[in-house]
Length: 393
Image 1: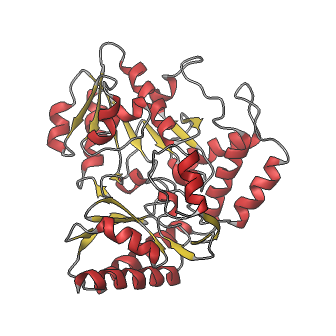
Image 2: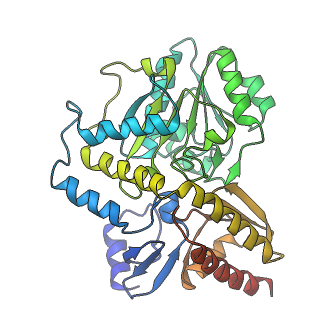
């Protein structure tokens, strides 16, 4: 091992396994390691680096805000916090009743959503529905909502009251009885292999939860903030949930998350029900506000849709027998393979100067920055073509 690998093994908890490179700098969709090698980053910190690396507007905001206020506690408000809350209300369409609770991460946002559902349901409605193959985080409440047994088993018993159901309208209709307080779902199940929900599912979920008095909570942590070509994944179905959670791309690399509510759901929490030390601090909210401004002023939602079309066309044009198709939407895409070679392709891609990952053995996941260029897509497809050709031979 190299010296940095020795240091990592000796100092870092073994929760992620050996790291793949020592990255030291980046610009746009490219990063460089300690040896000077450059990589095309088509994973974006797992859908986090929505504006790529070292974006000048983010650098400027961090510098200016750090010189003013970094942290003041939630006994006080700050201008960046209030401005970001207003922006989130506007882009999501939650209206005047919309309310925002800021966190530091996606799993914390889903913990807040878990507690929201618990308080709403009380003893009369103790059940929360989640989907098979769901991933909502690794803290104990979010882990209870997560379906993957390998993540759950070492920490059993889980918090009770969560029922995982198949992602079908029929299963939802059958399970959504008077004991259910909430349904929590991802528009696209990223960790499961970039699996979209069945056609019409979100609209049916909205209708059924409203009819039966349960909350609809949508986990937009991976799909939100422009990732799918809309500000939020649920907007493609023209619905509005009672609550949704955000993180990842909201801060473009700076840690921040949020729970956003509307209507009666905004009145569930009262003082003392929930809290956070760092959530919503001026520095984090200033960065996130800049992220939203840059996406809007740069017409990046349009770019996402255009680059998706380019990617789909170019991948189909490879005519590789190893490609079964492309799942997902916008710039959260899963390249489905006909053989279980995804975990082999990831290190081979890294050696070729490309960063992707494999959520399962038959899927390559890509989640590049929202501002990638046509040339970036061409470079990605060229590397992918070479990797697949070597395995097809």
